[in-house]
Image (cartoon, rainbow, N blue to C red):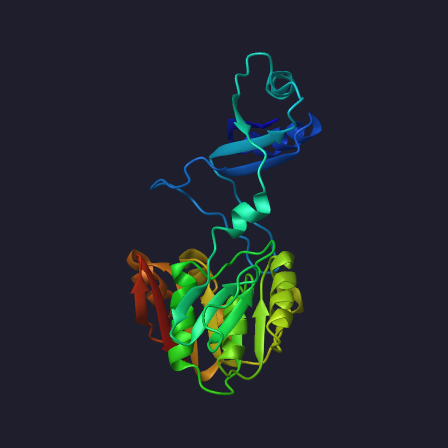
Length: 291
């Protein structure tokens, strides 16, 4: 029997109240997303280290999942009133773990470096095979921004160099740095699940790397700082990120659309001159040497 999915459009001031009320009315889960996602006026929200996300989307797409036997119309009317007409669709029962895993295959990032999901066997056993299970964290290694950073590390990382992975997600960049011969490697992320996933993936790959949440993070300046996040937080965090690199150290940035490269470069100009390392599918990786 199919699960029931209810979709609603809700303004910013009502999103939290409606989400909580749907859960009280029997929803098994509720998701809130930007109703403009995928459109030109999509607007990301950011939570900075040591703080919480601020602001809200003007127009929210709220999706709630209900069990098959719930009277969805009655539940939604109890929340939104008698005139509510929710959009209801069926969600068939599936093996969601297998469905998710099937989306990710081993990835040849460079001739010697592969990312291999834990549910696959390595294609090239002689390569550096980074075994990855993202768990609940962000990062499978499949996005162009991740590949851009990994290729920079493969080409430029000196043996024994210290590395900080800022916004580590599943730990893929930090772990790859260790596999490629880095010295001390540290990762930080505002998401506690990311820290857990990164530690698990480091252990899975048999590498020594330390991962922290921002409040516990105070490493010495590193030879290489890599940050694969998004352009707006990269610009806001420019003083912090540059402060993590030693004088003469490299700062490597990705998560930047090609059209945003000049804005990001301008934010970092007090500390270094950024240059493009490579571009892929409309994304660019920028890097420079701290003065």
